[in-house]
Length: 488
Image (cartoon, rainbow, N blue to C red; front, side, top):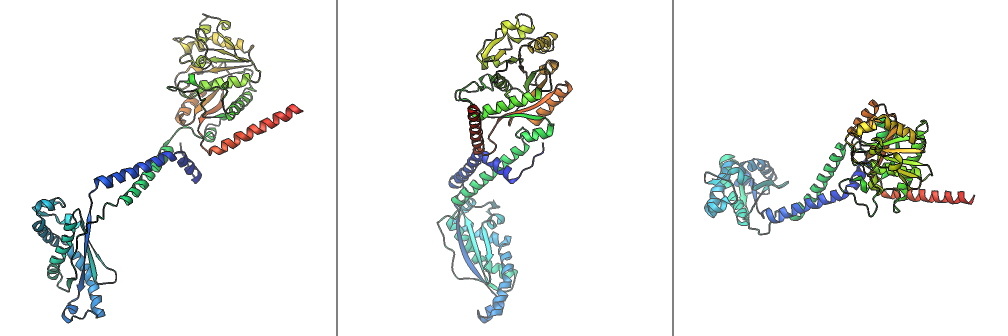
């Protein structure tokens, strides 16, 4: 599924994941702080300055001659390369071993044939020219302050002879000696902590973006509508009653409209679904429809129950049938017995009147699934079931069937002659477009009328204040309208 992003989309995405981003940044900062503070060794620097003198300058002792200074400047880059030569490094390494002993030096450098490896020593030394002068600066950084100073002093001691032999022009002079500084220059704990914070922040942002980019789940009703050219019958935001605790995605703990603390916007959403369903059924003689989903635990049973309640609240006579005889939950949602039900009615072990639960709420009857049957598909495909639905259609204004997931079993595909159509419940952030594709192919192959989709458990993708304002506005408008209507 191709996705495109604009600045608003990215900001919305990162705001929704802000706590993950903050945690990632804090973890990164903490990791770098601990790494710098307790793992990285302290390093100490020392430095020395050397001055390049041209041949003429040496012979005349005329340091104010402008041309001689320019000649010295031109020699600096040549001298810097000469100071980095392996022969110079080996000479410095030998004197370090003589001065501190092999074991001490081996703890600070990589050794080769009893001496310091030139590349190891070279990595501890920085030689740079001073802008617009004939001076160069040597900086040495090691884990030992005294060794850092010694490297600078030894290099200043041995380098003039090497430079004289190699270049043959000019000379190097020093004014002072390098000193030991016992204040560590590395690690910079503050700097590293900031880098860790920024790194953790950027890493989590990147991960969030990649996960969202690769996410193939449904999060936008407009995309679903445009892709499949089917109506969006309704959208239901996530809501949980205070006493409702779902376990193992069991819809028996689902939320329904008869509980007192259902948010107003949820009630209005189901009323809109009811209205859209009436329009969908307007061209059909049958007022029987099925509610299903692509996969288990996507909210089809809760949705079926709430649609039935919404219809019953219009004083229409409604029958809710739990046609999911493999994993029935409707009876649990309404705290009903399930000793007999659809399976025993179709199996002719009980009559409909013996099995139906009358007026579970006003105007709503419920036929539970009944005991588990070994052949639910065959029962639903039977002529007896078709005749039963046809007969019940004369008694009820609307019949709603909660059916098994389309991608799991084919039960719902066998009842096309008994229903006017089917609506598919999609779970926000869970149902994938591949799941929908598979469902649509099966529904089309069975030649079942597809009413559209209900997007369920939508997270507050946009600013939550929008929903609060919208709900407050809707409530106020509905209240005012109803009050005025009553006065008339």
